[in-house]
Length: 484
Image 1 (cartoon, one colour):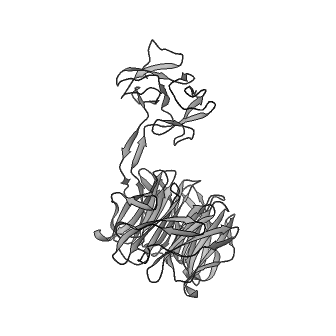
Image 2 (cartoon, rainbow, N blue to C red):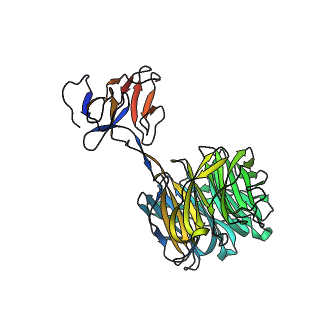
Image 3 (cartoon, rainbow, N blue to C red):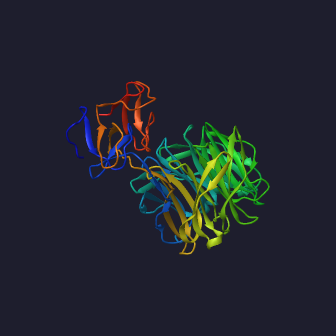
C-alpha cells in the first residue's frame, strides 16, 4: 500500500483507488497495493472433469457429506468383485474430487444402498440389502479418518427382503431414519429409527406407511424432526409422505400425489431450506419429459404446485434416476439426470424456487456417456455439489464430478479488508481510508453497541457472512469504531 502526507486522522491512510470509491463503503487492499470497494462479480456455472473411484462395474451408488471431516462418503456395489459392498472417501475442491482407497463394508453381494451422516456421533451409517444374507435389510456404522473409513459390525433392521433402502439423519432427535420396501410383504413400505452408539446401531420397531407398492424411494430431511419420502408406484404414479420422528419411533401422514394424475418415475428429492420448500424431480413416463414440483409441508401433509419441465429423461429402469440436491450457498436446487435427447449424457440444470414453482437455467453436461445411479450431495466445505454415478458407456465405471452453481463471487477475503472510504474518490485518485481504531462517521442506521460485519457485497450487517469479517462496533447511528 502507498501512503503519504496530509493524512487527516491518526490511523487513517491514503492509497491509490482502483475504481471509484463511495463515501463510507468497505474497502479492500489489492495485491498491487491499490484499494477498491468490496464488490461482487458474476460467475457462470461450471463442472470439473470426472475422476474414477472404481474402474470396474459399479452400481447402487449413494453418498453423504461428513461435515466434521469435510469428506464425501460413497457406498456402492462392486459388481466385478462378487458384488461386495464397498465404500470410498472423497475430497472435493474447485479442481475436482480425489478419492482414497476403497474399503469393503460387506464381504458379500449387496444392493440398494443408502448413506446418512450422524453429526452428533460423527459417524456414517450405510443401509443396504444384504443379498448374501437372504436379502435382509442391514445397516453398518463407519468412521472416517483422513481419506479412509473403517466399520463396525453389521446390524439387521429387517429380517425379510428389504429393497430400496434409504437413510437420513434427524439432527433434533439425533437419530437415523430408514425407509425401505419389503418385497416379502407385497412390497409394503416401512420406516424405522436407528440409534448410533459407538460403532454400532440399534433399531426401534418398524412402522408401515404404505401398501401401494412404492419403490425407488428417496428422502429429504426438512428440519423440526420431519422428513419427506418420495417414491413411484407400480403404475408410475409419484407419491410423497411426510414423516415425523419422536424418540425411537416414527409416524407418517397421508399420501399425496406428486404430479397429480400424471406419471412420476424415478424421483429425486431435496429440501430448499431458504424457501422452506421441498423439490421433487422425476421422469414423466407419459412423454419422457423431466419434471419438477415444489412441495409445501403443513403438519403431516404435503401439497404441490404445478410441474415445470426441465428436459427429457432417459429410461433404463430404476437406475436411471433424477437426482436433486440443494445448494444452500447459491440458493439453488440442482437437478442431474440422463438426457434422453442426447444419448443419456449426464446433464445438470440449476433451479430457483419462487413460491410454489421452480424455474431452471441452462443445461451443462457432466458426462458424455450414458449415466446411471446418479447420487449427489452438497459439500458445504467446498461450497459445491458432488455428483457420483455409473458411466454406462465406459465399462460401467464409478465416477465423480464437482459442480459449482452460477452466482456472484465477492472480492472480500478473510484478510484483505482495511476499512472504510472517508469520502468519494475517482479511480487513480489518492483516497483517504478510515482504518483500524479510527471512527468512521459516514454510516447510517446503526445501533450503538452493536457489532457489525462486512457483507460479501460491501454493505455491513449484524450477521457474519462467509468469510466472517468484523467491520467494527457502532457508537451512534452514523459512527463506527473500525475493527482493530
